[in-house]
Each structure stands twice: as C-alpha cells, then as structure tokens.
Image (cartoon, rainbow, N blue to C red; front, top):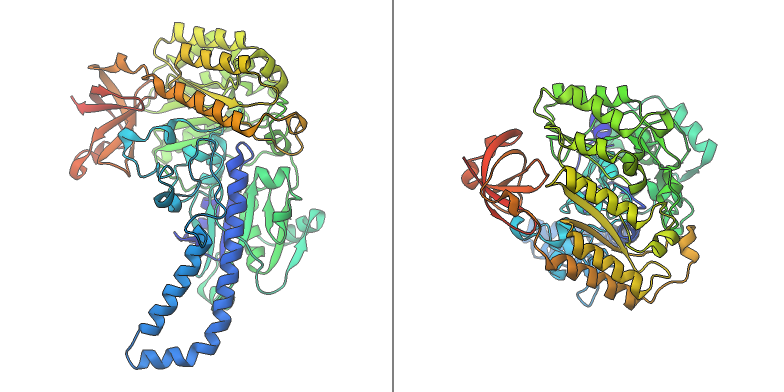
Length: 599
C-alpha cells in the first residue's frame, strides 16, 4: 500500500500527531494486534478532541497571542505548548503517569516504542543486538507464518507482524503517508488514530461502496492547489483500518465512522484515501477469489529483502483461529507468477533475500494439483547461479510431513537457508485434538527428527500456546518436556486468547493466573538453555549481510542456518558489505546470535 500511495504523490510523516490520515494494517493472528488497534483509535479520538478544543480556544486568544509576539516575547506561546504537551502526555500515560489503555503482548512487552521509557521491559528495540533476548526470538503467534500482529514506528515488524502481513505492509509499510499537506499515516499493524472528518460523512457500504469506488477514475497525482483547498487549521485525523480484523469483524463497535479495507482490496488503497479526503466513510470488504497482484509497487523496510506471498488462506480449521474468517480457504498463486516476480526483483531491484510466506506454505499448490516441493525446485533452478538466498516461511506439520525428505534435500541447496518454522502449539495430543490441529505430537516429532537427521545444523522455530481450554497439568508438562528435549532456538510463546466467533471461544477457560504461570514456566525453560550455535565457533562462514544495526555499531547478516551474525561496523568501516556475501570467522556464540570477524 505504501508503494501505491507514494506513486500517487502522497508523502509520509514520522509522528501521528502530524498526520491527516492514519492507516492501520491489522492482523487476527495475535490478540495484541486487535487490542493495540483499539488503543490507537482511542488515542486519536482523544487527540482529535484535544486539538478541536484548542482550535476553538485559539480564536479567543488569537489577538492576545499576536500582541505578545509583536512585543518579542514567547512566554505565552511556550506556556500554551507546555499545556498542550501536558494534555497529550496525559492521554498517553494517564494522569497518574501510567498508560490508561496499555495493551501488551503475551511476553509482557509494550506494543508501542514511545512508551518504552516508562515500561522498561518494552524497550526491546533499543537493546543492543547482543542482548535483545526475548523481544526478538520469542514472538507470540497462534499458528500462522505471520509472526506479526502489530508494529509501530520503532518496533521491528518481525516482532509483531506475521510475515505475510509484512508483505502487505511493505506495500503500505509502517510509516505515515501524507499528501504534501494532507498526511496519511500508515502504520503497519496498529497505530494511533480515529475521528470523524469535517464535512460530509457519507457512509458507503456493500454494493454502494463498490459503486462509489468504481465510478472514480484512477487517482491522479495531487497538486499543491488541490492540497491547499483541502487544508484547514485543524482537521480531524481520519482512520482507515485494513487487513484481517475488519474483514473478519466488520461490525465491531469501534469501527463506527472508520473506513475499512479488507484483505482482497489492498490494491484499492489510493481510491479509498482519495474518498476519505473528500469526506466519505468507505467500507471496502468485498470477498473475492481474485488474487492481489504480486507486482504492486513497494517501499521496503529492508531494500535487500523481498517478501512474496505464495498463497492465501489455508486448509485447516483450528478451533482458536480467526484468520480463516478473513482469509478463507486455500488459494495459491501460479508458479509462473511467483518465479516471474523473483526474476524481476533480483534483476531490477538488487534483491538478495527472498522470504516465501503465507498462512501455511506447506499447503501451497494443493488447490492447483501442485505442491511446495515443485515450487521450490523451480525457484532454485532460477537462482542457483546467483547470490540470492531463499527462506521458507511457516508450514504446519501435516503438509511438511508428506514431503519431509524432499524438503530436507532442498534445504541443503546452496541458495536455501537451512531454516524452517513449524508450529507445534502443544505437545499434548489431548490439547491438539481440542485445537483441531489435524496431527498428533508423534507426527511433529517425526518431522523434527528427520530434519535434524538429514540437515544436522538446521534452525527450527516453533510456537507454543499456553493455557488452552481444558489443558491439564500433565498436558502442560508434556509441552515443557518437548522444549527441554529439543531445545528449539526460536520459540514463539503466546497465551490462549479467545476470539469471538471461534469454537474455542465457547470452551471452558482456564484461570488467568494459571495461564500466566504456565506461560512463565515455558519462558523460563526456553531461557534456561543455550542455543546450539557452538558448531559455528571458530568456523569460516559465508555470510550474507543485509542490515545495519540501529542499536549498536554492527552490520547484521545470517549464516546458511539463518543464525544472526554481528560484524563490527565502527565508523561505517564495513557498511560496504551490505548486500554481499562475505567470508567471516565466528569468534563467539551467544543465545541470540554469533559474533564474527572478517577473514
């Protein structure tokens, strides 16, 4: 979306207080996404009321303020600024100095970076790379390759957004879009926002909404005269909520007077923004099996990484999952569309890393009488003579089970990261049955042991949901035992969150304190062991560097096993290595990463 908006002349601002339109790209995978979405909307509502009040007061004090300026004093202005800042701070933190609407993830991290100074535990984006800990690896997920539920300006998307949603939000990334005067705020997952816009408020729904959009010509780039006509001293920040939440729960009370864009209509974002600027409230939620083009323009957070969604929807019917309500049944892209996209971005945009993502990559192609193995072989056939790496996204156990040996062989290909994300959710067959996960723990163990047998140093990531309804102490202990035995280097931990409309919503809940204790026990077990990166100690590795650290003087890359590598970058001495493979010696290993030196 961000790429589309940028192409039509919209610009992006850094602070929500400076925008005219706030775009939230929401996700149903994790509860923090929905709760943070509400937090943002409530914040903007309050912000709008505050600014509206200040605007009315401004006319009364206008002459007095001008006189003070003429006299060369800024005391009155500074006093007003302090007063306004105090009001805004109270909105953020409450009159008692704390957040009155704080939403946190299951690991206890704040959803918003600007609150990190108060909460301490939430400032994971400011922690040095060699001590990031939980905030980077322990992402809470509910069984979707979307390790992302929400993310805001400073928060790493990887922490709070599913990978597939990240692909959507590269098209509308996580900044703010503004049209040179009319600012459109577009935070990836959740951002601050809401309020009615001054002027006509025409609620356009269903077929009427489609007619409104269809009658419009493709949006033209806006010029300065158009912008000037639409500007006023104060206009409410308008909200557009996109993605899975409005698609699955369009009737939420909080969506009153808010424009909504469903998962199949992201490519209509320019028309939606133009209509919102004109004073309309648009609900664009029409379901369609037509796939969004893979070739929409993007503005990437990382210019070396391309995220490609290979299919939408899934074949499962998990009792706790709301994503199926939004995304529907499995629909896969044609292999030619995926390969052509890879060819283009590699040849024309200097992409070095491809992330293949979806709700379930292992189910790819079943609707087309194809499978993930066929797709990977064709992709690798194209990239094998280049310096591009492929990372396979999340796959559920039932589908990789069918192709485990073929997948092992493909992961050993020089252009494939030896990394895979397979969510187990629980080690108890009783719990898996209640979840309707369509596999048993023996299936999961078979997959893990075969992967480790044929790809010895593979990095396996998995997910755990703590406190699912009817989970007993014995069920919980089975999960603890699994983690201790296999020592997964990446563990995405979440507490069960009942989603209205799902089967699990009506199941008998476990006491909240018990759920929190179980989550804490799983976390403690995970933190108790050192990751198995010792095999890298003292070895020479060919590392692809793709990122400049924002927390320390390092550049960041990954080994063939997708182990994070830090290389010193004091005075930008090694910044030229970004986008290149480099031979490095691993000099130390840690829980979350390894440290390297140039050979």
